[in-house]
Amino acid sequence: MKNIEEKILMADEEIKQLQNKRKKLISQQKQEERKKRDKRIYEKGAVFESIL
Image (cartoon, rainbow, N blue to C red; front, top):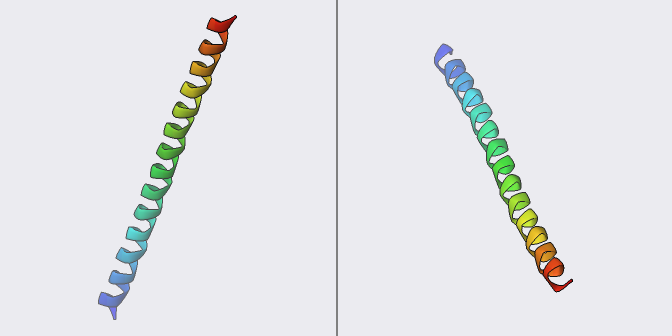
């Protein structure tokens, strides 16, 4: 029985690690999207400013 309990604990720990990894990757993706969005905004602003 103890062996099964140990496997359950190890699986739970692995789940926690994967959830944390998922959160980190989602955060990284959002940050990259923000950078791309900001770059587009700055470029459009620069084009608009050059017209004026």
